[in-house]
Image (cartoon, rainbow, N blue to C red):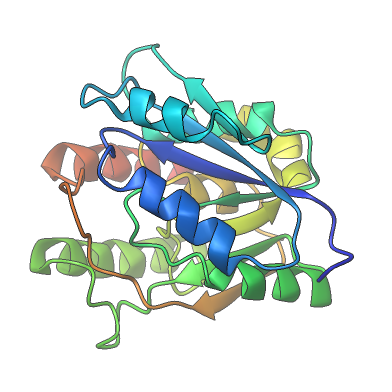
Length: 233
């Protein structure tokens, strides 16, 4: 792992003032012997997140804040902006709410390197009892959508809607014109642009949100539904 090339961590956020600094400290303490840079893509937060981040990264030379002000707010568009900023061979995406434990990053690097993968997915294992970080609505809706996606496109991963994954940047560069490019499930978008990708899962314990609130709602589910339909047709 010490010889693994420097990679980019993309963290899209909206109103995560109470969680983001704790997450950044956790990444630095748990990701050992690896070289990385972090791009925090702030989707025009209104809670003071940008000020908190700016103060924290003043003396950090590997963490960068990207202020996104274009409307509409959109997680996939935030991720894509981060992908364009990265100059590294590998990119890792994770949420800024603390539900993705940075300790798994070390294993993701090891696995993507060992098996020469295109993508390694932090799978929430939603069909077991381990996905304790999801409320009932999110767990049921996620299960139904995963079954639907796997039926339509074939099973490529246990969790095609995960927000915690690592991939080769060339996947984005080669397929960017095929992306739906909006919504909240950029992994699903990447996977379904090219069905010949080498993908493996790593089982993760999806943590409960400590502070703030989930952005998942009926509107986002409808966006995802239309995204699936656009991929089919």
